[in-house]
Length: 268
Image 1 (cartoon, rainbow, N blue to C red):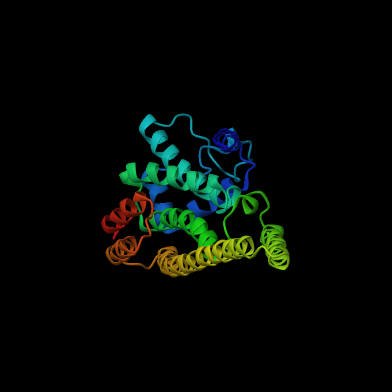
Image 2 (image 1 turned 135 degrees about the vertical axis):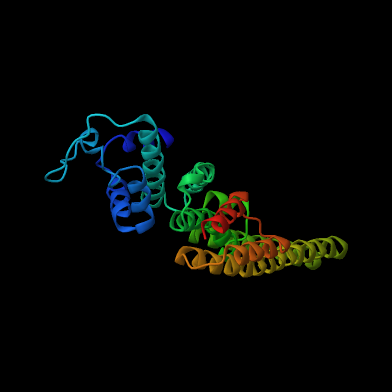
C-alpha cells in the first residue's frame, strides 16, 4: 500500500494532488507557509514534473535553494498524505489508521509546520482511526464466534441462532425419549446439561450486551471530542482532560493524540 501511495504521489493525476493544491491557496495558514519560503502553492515548482500545464504567465525557476526545496517538500508531503488518506483509505480499512499515525508522526517532528488548521485536520484523522473499530465493537449485532468470523453479516447472525435452536430440539428429544423409556437418571442428566449449556450462553450474551452498552457510551464521548476537533474551535487543554477521563473508563487512544494536543497548545 505504501508503494502504491508513493507511485501515485509521483504523478499529478491523483485527485489528492488537486485537493492539496486547493488547500494551499484557500487556507490562509497554509498559504502563509508557502509564502514564507517564497512559494505560491502546492503545484508551484512542480507543474512540469507532474506533467501539468502551468497557468498562463507562470515563470519556471532556474534554481531553488536546497533548504527551500526541503521545506517545500515537507509541506507538500503533509498535504498530499492528508488528502490521500481521506480519498484512498476509507476509515474502515487498516490502511487509514496506518496512514493517519504515520502522518501524525511526521507532522509532530516538523515543528515549523505546526498550524492550528493542520493540527486539527491531522488529529481528526487519528481520532477517526480510533472511532471506526470502537463503533464496530459497540454497535455490532453478532455474538463473536468462529461462525461469525467466517460469515459476517446477516448469515452470521441467523446461522448460529438456527444451529443453536436445532441443537436444543435434538437434546430435548433425547431427554424426552430417555424419560419415556424409564431412564430418568440419564434424562435428568441431559436436562441438566441443557440448562447449564443454554444458561451459560444467556449469561455470556448478557455480558457482551452490557459491555457493548459501555463501549457505546465511550464512543459517544470520543465522537463529541472528534467533532469539536474537526470544527477547529476547540480548547486543547480541555480536550486533553476529557481524553484522560475517558482513559480512566477504559478508552485508550493513540499517544499521538496527546502529542498533537500539546502541539495545539503552542499553535494558539
